[in-house]
Amino acid sequence: MKTNYLCFSLIMILLSCGEDGAPNAGTSDEAEVALKMNKNLVLPPGFFEVNPDDVEIDNSVTVSSGDSQKVEISSGMTMTNSISFSAPNANVNAVGMRFGTTGPIYFVPINTSGATAGTGLFGFQITDGICDDLSSICHDIKCYEFAQTDSGKISAANIQEVTMVCGNCD
Image: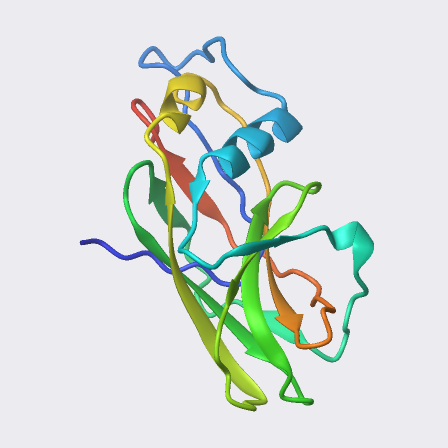
């Protein structure tokens, strides 16, 4: 199984054009694509959603990207998200992600056992149906990754580029 690592980040998803190089019809609105990505995101049991509008940012918690390379995401493939954090108060208890600038953040609990720094790992998948709507267009989209503290506050996000691989995508 091929494993790809993502770091806390803003993720750019680049889909290619049709075989003749011309853009094809399909979903191209960035917010609509993000919504489709989130609806097709499969996370492990125990994940939970947090509305970022309802929580405070904890600026003492930071997230970082360990890999500056673009990561390929293929629909139907199980991947591992690797989210590194620094928390001087040793209070991170979950890590999460969200495609796009709005909507809930999807968190997965982690056991950091009082660590002031560490990495949260969790498997995720984008279902096969995503390519039906996205494989024939060219566009960019953003995805964010976060850490959550035991008091419910969240970190600011960090940036990582990925490529969504569908059909004629390269």
